[in-house]
Length: 258
Image 1 (cartoon, rainbow, N blue to C red):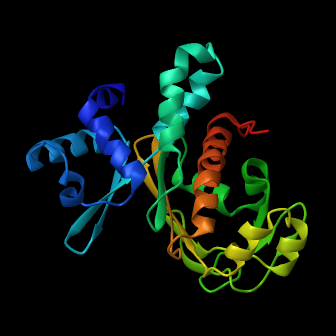
Image 2 (tube, one colour):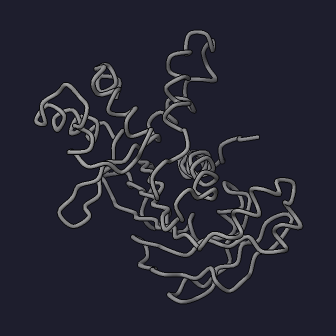
């Protein structure tokens, strides 16, 4: 990963994805003093370093920034060394974790776990309470509701439902809405909640793939309105939540986020 980041051209490509995620090769080439073949090679190196994720949409191949490797460095090293020695890395981490500018959020992490154990961590309320701070209650059958049990409120509006359930490889469900009960419990940001409550439902999908002794967990959160405020919120919320999930599965204890 450090070799991938050492090249200024590759860092510039990451900057451009940070400005607007989900770009094609042609879009990333625009305005750069590089041949298309050179940009393609740089993107391949960034993808191999897990700093860029790709997705096919018809004939197009879209490129997405993946901040997880930067998070992993921060989790392991930032607390061990003098902050002044890590200013450059901290600045890069902050840039990479800026709000997603496209209509989706994509995050990839590798966890020393099994697909079955990872599936359990995503669906068992006892697990989700430990790393997420809330319980997701469902029988995890397609069409079943998902109730969100938080410390202050339970969101059970009937619209958060399971869209796909293929244990232990794929899980997808619609996100909860901002209910009046939610507003009453977390109503300290009136403008945000007012805008969020008017947005359509989004969808989160978890893809679990075995990779040797690891699993590759890809989280895709999409279906947002243009200019979505909820997208900004989940883009900030997912990285620490997934880092805590990874730490719990690998060490038995969730990440201390408080």
